[in-house]
Image (cartoon, rainbow, N blue to C red):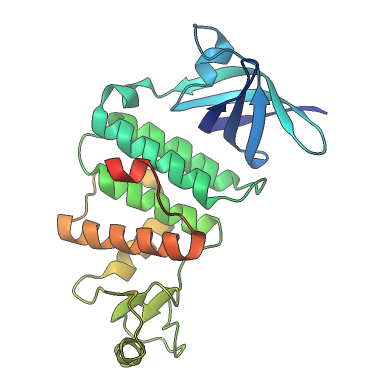
Length: 248
């Protein structure tokens, strides 16, 4: 069956006979693995569309077990990202995180739109890039159905103020329950009562990325939120040993 979809290349691996396997995040089919014999060099439409930070349209041959990219063309290339070291590293991290977080063939069109919007903003943003990355990661967790519990204590179920965040339990913990988890040897508690982390996460979920164009978290809060998201993703989504993580 021939079909097509908008997509963004997440990763590619060279195989035999000048072919490559492309991990492609498509708007129609979600994350897929697709083989292709299209060349990666040159200025052809297909070559440009298989480069990093490019939003493209891909003609796919789909059978029961696999996909093949027959042709591709660029919708928009965010080439400016590759001209800035920090933007390139943060963008590469977001692509790898997305590829690791999503299961195969689960369409999440709203997240695809968010990824396109992320690159549109990243290309021109000069400060607060880490805040933009954290906002995108929060939206990914929310839209993929893996968001931590933020409305009530995950231990007692009561709507009490957040005292800390339990990575293991997967959400906020009230002061009374935090003491019990600490006594039980839960080493995954992240104490966040000095910052309103919950409000920040909810703001990220409820507002488009464009609303964050002029917002940057305080460095200490940003570091704490980064720790929370990375440890949560490692424990619940098995996102560990990311190559790009060492660069950011």
